[in-house]
Image (cartoon, rainbow, N blue to C red; front, top):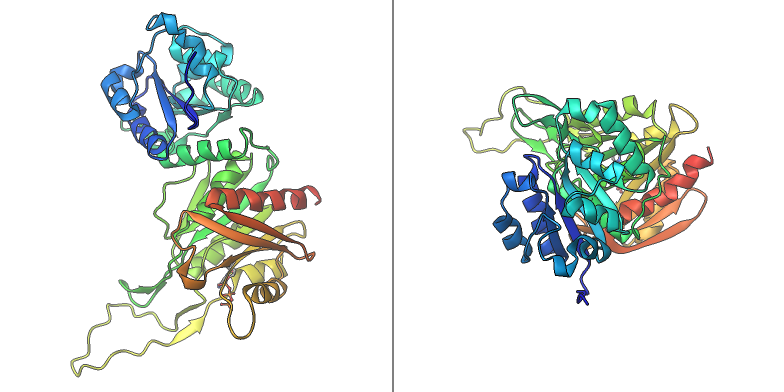
Length: 411
Ligand code: CTP
């Protein structure tokens, strides 16, 4: 009998692509977060990263063939005891084998015996990804319930660029662990919806090198974009000064100022079903922009900065919608004060902004900013209220989509 660890057992399948080296970082993320990981590389994967690396990083022996340790029946046991299988990178060949049930090595036999959630993170050249054979294999795997992450766009192995890069390991990790947290399957209840999410904090320039900014990290907005894509949505993410890796399968539009953010949000909103304003646009900007760098005055006096108010993008969008079916979701970062509690301020803000849902964060004492965790209350214009307990920003994002999906279906 095999002794099962109480930690979730993840099988990390690695097939033979140059992106195999990035799977080392993915492996580290799993092990450092306490997962029990068995790495199953293909023989071709070992051409890129050797067995000692996988073994050292996972703390376990590594085999590729069903002929190793036959008495332990590894081709059945590894799949049977897995709580999650993640294949990263998944080559075109591996996807084809998985789609057709071929089983000629330890990874492909494991895929046939596993009954847990399976995530494929493909990486290949654009032509191979676009080929009808690969498209059909991906469709087959998705129909059977596997989560096939869209590859990222960018530089490929050679000088070429295009769709086919392995998504950032942090993104694969977030998608995989989120899937586990959701009980192993993600409803495709946002399929067909076009979702626009804004994220990050705007910069308002004083001169070519100085700006007024804020502490928004973009983590919550990126989690919203990632989880919406995983639930089937077409996602446009408008990111203000965020340094996080692009979420897989998401169109990212980069902006700096509130004026740029407003222009991109309004342009994207016309074709959107829902806009979620998770960004922190600056409420004020310098009244004047100085074309050249502001110098210190010789007499030691300091410059006075006069501010002017920025447009309220959320209120403008909610009150003058480009089409009546658009769902508008706002965020409220609140602290209680002598005029009222966090929730008093939030209810007033929901009415003032005119949005359908308001996600309320208590930011007293600098909580939330840059943190991996969040907690929130989601207020509805219909008077409803949903508490989202403290958890990952992905979990909060999922709770927001749980509230948005019925609104979309009702329209
Ligand atoms: N927001 C916006 N445009 C702005 C400022 C904020 O669209 N110029 C959006 C944010 O993206 C967020 C919501 O409004 O979804 C709430 O922002 P918040 O800063 O909490 O509220 P304020 O409108 O600034 O109100 P106050 O400062 O009085 O709390």
